[in-house]
Length: 320
Ligand SMILES: NC(=O)c1ccc[n+]([C@@H]2O[C@H](COP(=O)([O-])OP(=O)(O)OC[C@H]3O[C@@H](n4cnc5c(N)ncnc54)[C@H](OP(=O)(O)O)[C@@H]3O)[C@@H](O)[C@H]2O)c1
Image 1: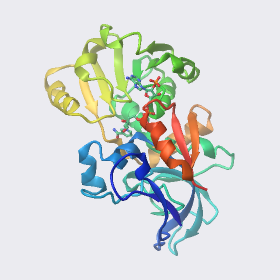
Image 2 (image 1 turned 90 degrees about the horizontal axis):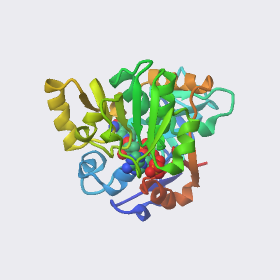
Image 3 (image 1 turned 180 degrees about the vertical axis):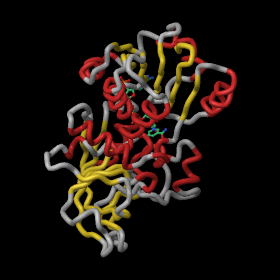
């Protein structure tokens, strides 16, 4: 089968298409033909080993991973002891920390975080919901304990996590301020944001005691800078692990009513979250924003685009 591989860490052009062995099927596993996956900032970080800590997960001297964490596909074969799926089922999933979705096939245990696609055809919208959607849900629902009436600011609101976060925050009844550039104002308003701040013209951190939750979906701010804009007992959340956030998690937990929170949401993905998001998709309370689609052969350009840091929602990589 064809897969996108890389033998050394580096710029986008280290990625190559190569024939590799098709995954073997265990008795409790399903073999999935992948239609689409997504290109994420995590893929970029894993490709160029930046931050350095990535090497502890994806190979210290040389990368050992095939990239790609989310997929939409069809089950081509099932192991002898599989009970929940049949060949021909269309499924979507996050391969969680296993990656390996930049390839024509993946085999996964049937009890992985996999959900069947409903009959209605919305496959194009679900490829990216697993990682980005579950991340937004984990931060807002589980960590921030969002509730109706909360004033929520989402920084990086036009990105993959941000576009789901706006819709989820509205679903939970919050008043949402979306921060991104003017070029994405219409997008975030259409997703339900009540207010928009253009970060190139206005600094939301200068506001005083306004927000119950500041969710920095792109990790461009710090707790110290945002503290003034938080109400007492409010929460600051960021997706990006830095020394600064770990320091403030320790300090704010003990000495401040305003809390700083980081979470590695990839470690807490589960079926409940995926089914929750699927229900919202079916009820049309949630939609995915797809910015661009690239063919497998064009993966280098897909990486260059995602690395620019200005994609809107998802960038899809079409495999089959
Ligand atoms: N903690 C976890 O477990 C976890 C899980 C998944 C992902 N992540 C991380 O989460 C981060 C976000 O991922 P993503 O896919 O949502 O990112 P993304 O889609 O690449 O974010 C791009 C968006 O960010 C906006 N943006 C860029 N610079 C900005 C700034 N200075 N202020 C405000 N907005 C800005 C851009 O809007 P404009 O074009 O308008 O500037 C663009 O629409 C990544 O670093 C990723 O590694 C963490």
